[in-house]
Length: 526
Image (cartoon, rainbow, N blue to C red; front, side, top):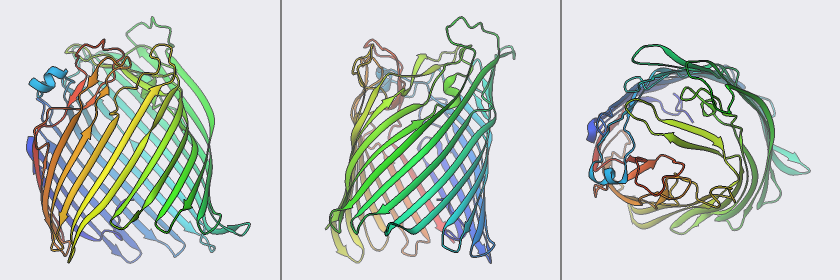
């Protein structure tokens, strides 16, 4: 939920600085004037980067203005504007991670000269407390990709409009049972979307691809029915219509592939869901859900300017079952969820060509064969000590187990899908005084995972340690902190490319994580 003048009145200032040339400043103000309220926040950030030649900077403004016409009618307008200049380091080999982690021979540069979001939400409350919400949105997202380093920069234009209608009813009765329901319609249309590339050496346009007319339309019904004092039944049904248009209008390259130069389709699907919650005890509840999801490809996944053809990439669909328990007792509270998804036509991307000084990286997306996503998500918090007067020692923990794999693929069998750690564990131990002082020790551990679909090369596992100390005034008027990360100066991969088959050879597929770094900051409410 966005901050407003009613939820965050007054003035706020925050300043941060740290390693690798990091600087960030934020100023905001909010207030209420009769039936009107306002909130405005401006922000600026810069960072020189850990890898060579990776400076980043950005600045922007976020604002919203609300007006209450009557107890039944109110509206709010939103504005967001942001400029960014981003430089990203190239991927490294495992050897470079350990011995030359700041190396960056083929940097990547992106520039957003001004992304703009304009929107409004108007709410009308009927006499029976039912609500009708009307949302309008306009998004302009220009992108200069490769503006600084690429031999073939790309200029993206992406402008879309959105209409959302939502009708909500609460505290109704259905056969004598309490019922909350909603009806939602949403339509997002790309009314101007294309990408054009040119040769930096000659300035000649090389290719233009148009996506204008692509659209996502969703109509959904939802209901939560209280069957008795302990049991709730949740149901829903979504009708989803997806239209994709991608057409290469001009190219200096000849399409010699089996793929077409344009793709257009309109696909409709239904996504039902049903869930049950049961209050096992006053402190614990168990739940189970069965649902279907439909995830369409973004337009550029069909093709952009790297190849003179378009791929007929269709929406990814999945059927999911999940069960879990959540609640707390004594010093503990937490949750545990177990899930399994049967995925069809999964959207899978692979790096088919690494970037060099003379050519850009090429990434291809296609629909894979059947896959399974299953795993465990768990969280546990414990207040280990309460010294009175607000003095506490708290331990927060989160654990994720991910098992994403093919299901009898013709080439890869039951191989694991690349790019995602199989296990992730996070913990934070915090000592906090009622007077405002606090100290934290935190850890993040990630297991090894495969980089390629052939499961021949893996990313190294890692454990990172961090510490943070600070003071927050009891009045909440000001705070100061020092945050130190990667205390052991671990050299690790924070993410990877996804390769088709690395053949077990060490290759440049790893994005280096930051070395030991410190950030300090101060904030004021006035």
